[in-house]
Image 1 (cartoon, rainbow, N blue to C red):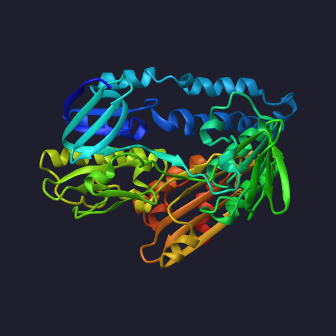
Image 2 (image 1 turned 30 degrees about the vertical axis):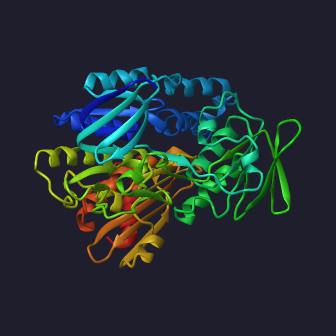
Image 3 (image 1 turned 60 degrees about the horizontal axis):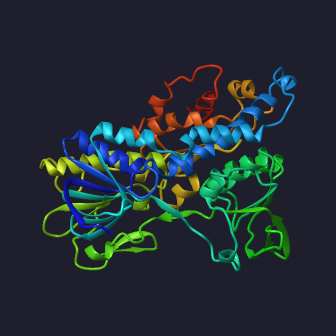
Length: 484
């Protein structure tokens, strides 16, 4: 390591994924200087190993299946998916894992990049072990932002640590389609990648400790389960894996419930947790306890993300997956925009203490309206609490559910199968949550998000007439069933 370089910036951002980039962009737009520190690719997990490549792998199968269901198009389908072409398309979508364009964007906005690993050494102080062999001692005038994303959670299964396996990175960056794939986990990543690889030619076995998509309504999860099984995925629910072993030929044997399955690749998709290790949090009285930031000394607390050193105001922020709230790229970018603007407002004396809900500096939607989509076929799109969640929270709510059976769905497919639910707050007569399941329902989600964030009264929402013939007609049917 060469001699230390001392530098000062208004804001230091640790992590140059989508979240870190957005924080830095907002503070620079606000007139502050910013540096981002990144040891891997600028653009982060979503761009290269998560959202983007997984959807690129899923899309060919969804497009082909949609065409196969429409009379006239069905007769024109003469082949199956070209796995090699799909992988090349995925490579194009990830820029072949090159971040040159992202780096150019940083430079064009005036954000400085240091490639290396950052560690907090004191209030507003970060030490960077640069990949160029240099050591950098950085000082922030206003804020340090932790935007380090999340890491895979690996379950404690006998033999798992002794065998090679994929996490989502391995699956989304695969160079070839394995003949046999086993998937541990029935969450979003597990079901999406199980279906993608099944449609690309793998024989897939999915094993989940509980039911499929446990955070979504069972009716929606049941449609996804049927879709997986229709694609030949062998699904084992409420099942614990007992042991994983590597065979002489390099394949793996997974033992569960007295049965075994052999696989050429094993994908462990058992969730993720904030990536907070080796950040020097202990140097400022913080600890990563179970993936969440907690105080260990007399530091004046964490307030909606930022921590204070007790003497000179808010300076440390955790944003996106690192904050452990809503581990979704779009919510992380939303939090990043609010955080960047809050840093600027505090620097200019326009913000003191905790921002008011729904203000430009607050992350209020993280508590009320977090949209999420499972990009399987059929899709699941959800925002706000499900009926079950709302009841557990003690809300006075009514659930309205029905199959999606409108002219728009029948136009989409003569055998369309879908389901919809809205959760109505009876005290305020507004929608608290909505879930849609079925082909193409992801595009229904933003209307629901707007209704929830805007707190649109049902009597007014009744006047939002859906175009005919579209899937959005389901809104009319839901409101009619409610009694409007």
